[in-house]
Amino acid sequence: MQAGKTSTNLFSFIKNKENERRNNHMMAIVVSEHEKIRSRITKMLQDFAVIDCETFLDAVSSVSRYINECGIVIADYNISPFNGIDFLDLVKQMNESIVSVLLIDGTNDDVEIEGLESGVDLIIDHNKSEEVIMAHVNKFEMALKEKSTKFSISNEGLSINDVYIRLTRKERDIVSVLLDGKGMPVTRDEIIKKVWKFAEKNNARAVDIHIKAIRSKLSMNGFSDYIDTVSGVGYRWNYES
Image (cartoon, rainbow, N blue to C red; front, side, top):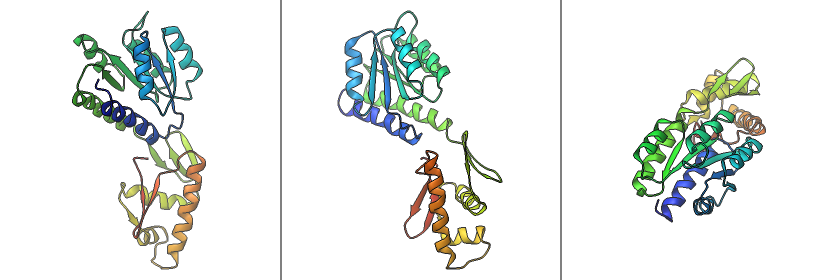
């Protein structure tokens, strides 16, 4: 891997994707029997609290201890008594939301193929060009999109994955209108017509008040960036939050 810009872009990308998944636990675990590799990766992860592990047993112990705080686990393929793929598979069994990254040296095609066919989120080859590295990053981005957040509206409120948020009827109807917008801006007039069934300028203020209440309830449950204000237009549901 090329140092400098490539490394910064790669791990900034991972960090940003973690933020998009609302993972506020900026902890990373790096596993390699080689001190130089651990040191190099750790320096790249400047915005993470990094735990570096030299042995398989140390890594298992650290992941077990910080399973709910860890956002990313980076493992060298060459760790005994098993390998990085087996270890990352174990990590996924413990917490499937953790981002798994496999380190390879690129000299063995069979290892790279095995990694690509496994369930790891991203493969980093130390010896490849930036173009190849970013191609793997794109694969990782697609994998995250496949695990996109699920929203559902019920008679009592909103469910985001397994988190249930109780909403009033008007709040629920407004969220439903925003979700139907498919990420596009929805004007206040549209919301008024669909929720209040008539257009009245005074209701524009009511929309803003309800939006504020919805945002507060979302924030209390760890979802603070789902409703965007579109200046001069209205609001949109941010599916990429």
